[in-house]
Length: 349
Figure 1 (cartoon, rainbow, N blue to C red):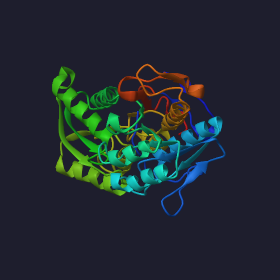
Figure 2 (figure 1 turned 180 degrees about the vertical axis):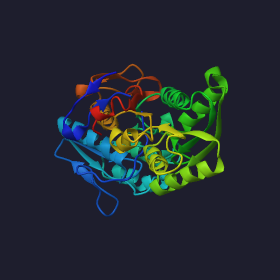
Figure 3 (figure 1 turned 45 degrees about the horizontal axis):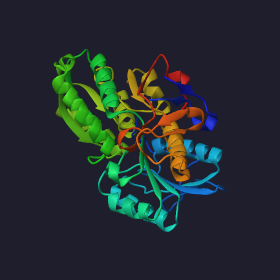
Figure 4 (figure 1 turned 60 degrees about the vertical axis):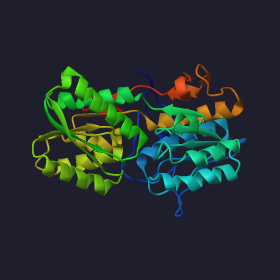
């Protein structure tokens, strides 16, 4: 496991996935305007657009900070744009605009694996390189995918954590993001398969999967509903930073604190108080700042022709080191890392 320190605004780095999405909050470096958002790092020879799933989301604020840091190093003119809500339809107009503006590259976290492909195809036909990060499209729709961690690794880590926290037996539920979120669904499918096939989890039963749509209040309400509908529930996995924070907030002020375990994917800053007060024992994530940083370096290498996106291509990503393109044009950042009371004070993102 490598740890990086870039600068105070670039977040203590961890090579881990995910993404995921956090409680809505602003960012000094990546704020949005009142009409759908737009912030940038400018002055370079290359021009790129950063399109997260939605604005006002601290997870993507962090990934954009990392992207802006890389853009500064590479003298790239990079702007962030995006919708207020996380839906595929809301992203299409921004993809079209990037093509019309003749951007060199579009760095995209996709709200749907299929629905964006027509717009992406038009952008690519206009010589825009399309790099997905955090959440992918179908491989044929884009040039590269910057993956935070393997789906298998993320699913395995979350099951490992919940099993430890509930003593290896009992009912659990999943609080996910949106029903069509590519990464969330992949992780859930793998967790379901692992629960069915791994004898270590024979005494754990997944009783429900619900969706908070990456909205804080809806995720909070879904947590309450899970506990009402499943009185024997022993644990909740929330593989989304919005969901885990909302669920932790509910549990921390309820009779279920210390009785129902909660784990999933979150950031240290958003989860610190819940770890320190005993609501949450441990959770996992990768560094979204590094994910945006890596995606920008990959986009630059692709535009420059240093790589084509073929398996075996390699490129430099600054202080993160050298990375290789894998099968289906996937570049892997790292493996999930566990945060707990022993280490959470060491991180600031």
